[in-house]
Structures are given as structure tokens and as C-alpha cells.
Image (cartoon, rainbow, N blue to C red; front, side, top):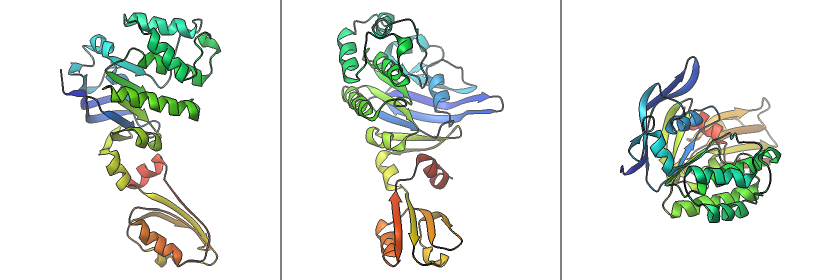
Length: 295
């Protein structure tokens, strides 16, 4: 078996004039908790559907545990738990019946784990699928993907629709699975979520792989977003400091915002010289990091 859980080799998918993915090269080690991040529409789901053998690539190839994702998809499926970004279920089934159906497909007895996961995620097994909220349907997908104890979990935007308390329970479950040796491929557009969980991240933008970094590297290269208002106008020359990007100011020069990537003490020293009305330092959104760090 391959030392890698996932290998993408020049993986490409075109949809006519619509953007897909282009020449993705990537390896995920066995046992790794790997983040796959990018804004909505970046190509994350296209990549994952190609990995799962649900769509055919236009070029290149992908493998899971050394097996080709197209020609050996049915063999790969035995070792993979998959949560798509959008689920579609048999609406007339009860939750317990649907999860039992999953267990039967894998020819496994998953009852103990099914009950444990459902309890931790506050999922009512007796309810009909048709009566469930979006968040509860997401829980069904999570339990279905994890209860078979797969060697690889592929999760596409898994927390959308989950309330914060359930999200935390879900993170704890994923960490436990990873500690047991499960490889996790975690797609998200929420940078803070990925920073909590993952060892490394691949950053996708407009169908292209921009960067693969460890979380430590990502944090060390991280921008801060600075917004402030002052009692008196400030000359634009005052802000000539290495590491400032996307600078903007109001015509009266009393409100300023910018991205800053540098020694935080240097910018604090600058702020001390001003007569401030208000100041805000915050983590930028993922979209802002894409705009200013990866262009």
C-alpha cells in the first residue's frame, strides 16, 4: 500500500467556459489531518468529487492508498467515509433505518458507534429524514461517514448548518478518530476552523493550488487587519511602514484601514503617536488573505 493516503497528479477538470480545477499536485500522508481551504467556488467540491470517482477528470489522475480513483473507485469506497457538502437522502426513512442501511452496505455491525456518535451530536434516531432540519441532516451524514471507522475521512464543508456546541463535539470526534490513525481530508472556507484542527493546509483559489503550508507557517505569515479613527487628520506619509498593504483612508484622513504583515510592536508604536478615537485589530477573513497575501 502507498505511504500516501491521497495523491493528486496534474488533476484537471474543465466545465466548458465554467471554472473547474487546473493541474493540481498534492500528497496527503497517511494519518495526517489535512485542510483543503479556499473561498466558495474555488474548486474544492470538484476536487473531492473527482477523488470519490463521482466525476471524471479532464486530465491528470488521482489515487487513494495507491489505488486509481477512477478505475478502482468501488474498492477505495470500502476504506473511505465521505461527507458531501450537500446531502440527499431517502426522505421516508427514519434516521436509524438510513444509518443501518449504510452499515449493511459496508457489511459491518456499527450499532455501538452509531449510538455513541448520535448521542454526542444530539441526533434523534427515531425521527424521519423528511422532518429534519438542515443541521440535523448534516449530523446524519457525519454519523454515516464516521461510524464505519474508515481509514480515510473526506469531509466537504462539514460544519455548515451545525450550531456552535455541536461543532465543538464534532471537532472532538474528529480529533479522536485522527488519534486512532484515521487520515482526515477536511475541506472548508473557514480559516479559523482549519487552524484548530489541521497539520497542513492546501490553499485553492480559482481552481489553482496557491500554496501548501503547515499551520505554523500559515500563522507566522498571517496578516492583521487594522481599522482606526483619529481626532485629527493624519498624513498618508505617516503610514509608510514595511508590511502595510491595501491601505485606504477617508477624504478627511481621519479614518484609515489596512492589512499589516510584520512586527506587531512596530505598528503598536505607531498607534501610540496618534490621538485615537477608536482602533480595531482583527484576524482578516480568508477572502482577504487570498486578496492580499496570494496575489
